[in-house]
Length: 496
Ligand code: 5AD
Ligand code: SF4
Image 1 (cartoon, helix red, strand yellow):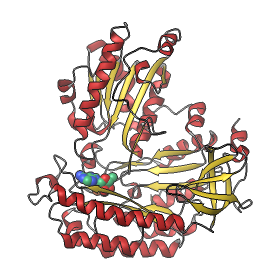
Image 2: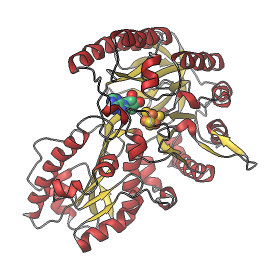
Image 3: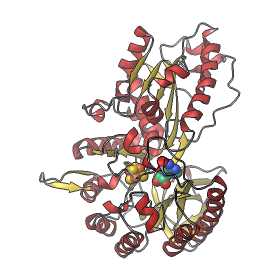
Image 4: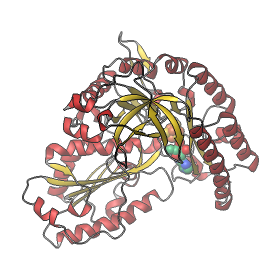
């Protein structure tokens, strides 16, 4: 499962003002003079939702929609929702109340606003969304957003449109590729969904119900998308899937192949500097994939491998189908293949029936493995999942206490990891100017921001950097000369 963030079309975090401006701005009226309509997409949740939000913008671009960061300017508002945790639907309904006010304010100025609810809440709630908020014009599930233009037309002609089917047709075959300009504006790192859905049915998780059965995109589709992105300046690709290491397809000889083969073939595309993949299930970390970490220098030495609990009893209740020792053994094999690898994981505290002893086993596992970063969550019963029907739910106060203790441990590990970077020399992919003049910021192999005093001409290149210190969230360093294997080219110039 993918880690959660909040983005607008998968870029910078965006705050949605509680006091939605009711005044229609000058810029809005000046946009009347152009034929372009404005699209405001707000995306919640995981990186795949961010990817989907960007694809929705791409699908709507040929329809004349241009993205805006100002909701009051929007002719079409899309909320791309996430259903992973408690009160997800309630939060969407309260947000829809705010969007409705924008719609009413614009209507009083004679301006139409369409409202679309997309993503996993759309999938889970369906028509209920229209009942609870009649200002919504269309509801579209995660497997149908390629049909947004038709659904918009239908909503206009019939008042409303809904599509929450799991269609037989391949959504990816119907997506509009982003224009070169849009890709360049999105930066040097890009996500590419290669796998979607899940057949694992962990007892706490809604994904198998909202995203459907596991499916893999073909190698040809993926390599075409990656090649286009690289042509338009992207240097780092993160392959996405709810269960990405379950990816399966055909190799160059038409034989069954897994994620290791996909990574190997993608790493041969000229211009790619970095490959990553997320999120993986421990049971799909097969020998070939583990070996790939040792063989592919472009595969970054940072792996997100959720384990959820350090107690075998709880893992069994979660239907994870592996033991704590299986996880420890996989990590040992991965570390043997790639000694400089760093790890991150997801943990749930307070799953039904979790005792203090179970929780202590979780802390012990975290101590044993040593994570560079960790995501942690209080268990929240999700309607329709088996976990929600279990009777031995853990009291909120106990969950909160365990969460605080786990947070303290993983925060200490994260600090220790960041501090251990000092004195190391590592490749940094420079992405943008820093906050202070003369400073540029890049990303370490471990996704840490790295700030360096250097010229903006290095933005878009991979450089060797000696790390000289760290703060809570960033590393600081100085250029250490070109690193063997890095292109050293200014790709911004190359793209111009
Ligand atoms: N309660 C708490 N956390 C959950 N996650 C998924 N479902 C739930 C739930 N019902 C967490 C898991 C997953 C991450 C993305 O979200 O740890 O790996
Ligand atoms: Fe959800 Fe489990 Fe599938 Fe991850 S592996 S998406 S947690 S059901």
